[in-house]
Image 1 (cartoon, rainbow, N blue to C red):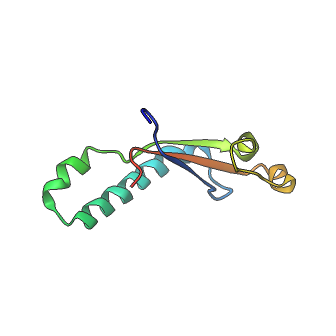
Image 2 (cartoon, helix red, strand yellow; image 1 turned 60 degrees about the vertical axis):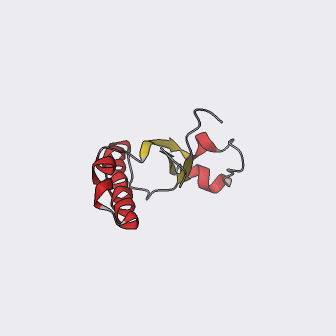
Length: 94
């Protein structure tokens, strides 16, 4: 498949807002890069990893907006509380 980027959904705390998205993305990218370097145990990957963003985007949705996507169903009591859901898109799947 050409052009597909893997993504997943996560439920943040109720206090999470749109203003938190950029900071969350930065922290997530930093954590993943640190783990890549640790698992490869190689210094020569440092330049590659330092310029690479494993998380392409983080989008914030109201849970009710996602209720119709494949295999994502919420009960009516959850929808009434209007929780938010994060869609996290990655640059690679592994």
